[in-house]
Length: 155
Ligand code: CA2
Image (cartoon, rainbow, N blue to C red):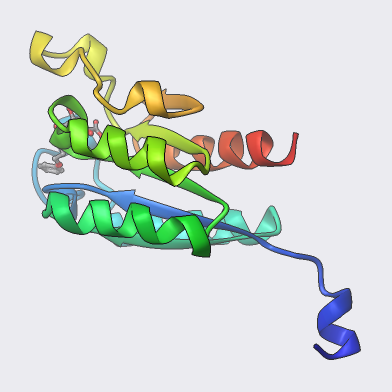
């Protein structure tokens, strides 16, 4: 390692995962999920992460297995996870198990407030494997989740 690299402060590495159908953000159902695209949310998140001496790698998938693989990968490559598991939030014991196994902190994020919506959205299978949750603030939930996650990591 060069002397310059040794002096460079370690940037906290965050993996941001968005689950099924979130690629439609800003395109469909703006009355529920707002007008910002997922690409814009990712851009804002990267800018905020930089201000907070962190980096964020943002990924989206409609496939539960791929989300599981990315969570497993995070154990060696990231310090924490931001997760909007979409509808898998309410169904996936596999995501809960993966988050428990990876043993790095995860913050659950939602654009809407699922508890103020249909009864079938009230239960989160992943919540018990997370250090906290931010829901109901639209795209800002991702930014608030990032701040909460970095706070938890640096406490
Ligand atoms: O509020 C959230 O972030 C949710 O995770 C969104 C999920 C929903 O199943 C959860 O209960 C709460 C749905 C994601 C679908 O994303 C779309 C975005 C734009 C248009 C249509 C779907």
